Image (cartoon, rainbow, N blue to C red; front, side):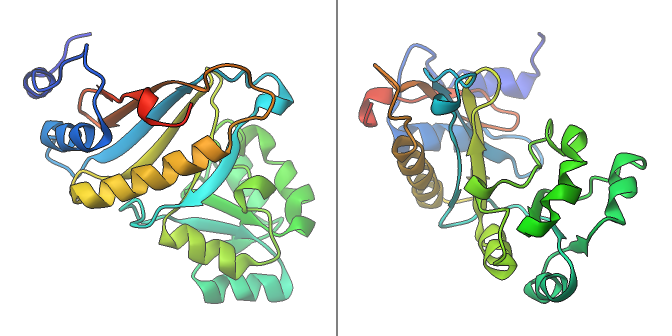
Length: 231
């Protein structure tokens, strides 16, 4: 794969054989983020879990202290008083069955998070094939299936992010923007890592984290010293 000149220059800052501590890694990622837009800083955590086993699934949510720097568009499936509550709390879109054909047939996906009241999950379930692969299905573990729609919306707007294993047993999560200060990124990163370490499956034997890499949208990855985290 041919890399651009900026990427090649940025990659020279990083020694691929070195495992960096958090502060160094964050400083390098910020330095290497040279795109013309405000790049997202992401963490990629490779685990030794096997997501095919229900008892080794990792899924949850955490509120990052400084948010993600991204404006999150929230769709809420609710009816009656709960729909009114969702609108009052600042949901971008609120609806029920009438949204099914719009999403299924018209491919409408102008939202980043879906929240649903439990009574609406029968309706939302019909969208599983569309929302599931995109990681948009509401889930009780992530706090997105709830009667307390105000709390869910407030937390998401404040910087709540969801983490889960992908098919290759890696967790991919944004922890802010390249324009954040190093302290803000460090706070967000530490909050995420504390949640991930807490979520370690009790049935897992041996090492939990294989590798942790920090990167920006267009920049090279910086590997962290996993031994610094409880393993």
